[in-house]
Image (cartoon, rainbow, N blue to C red; front, side):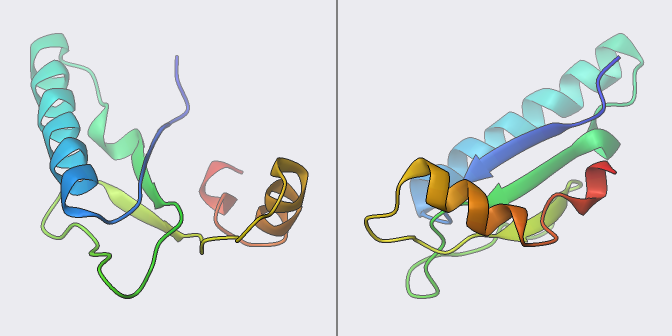
Length: 92
């Protein structure tokens, strides 16, 4: 009864390995449960930096986009900034 699964990574090599393994696990669950999961799974890149950050390629999940690193921003400020973007439009 879920609408979607959103996984978050920062584009680092370690985070991308974890995301890739999580996607593999979801594919196994989907097959074992005979339930659509992958087409409801999305990735958002948080604190993504163009230098050193890499987007996963050749994976069966949609990438919603990325958010920059907001230096010394409060949670409220980050939420306000993100609410002005279209990053969550896939859930409407």
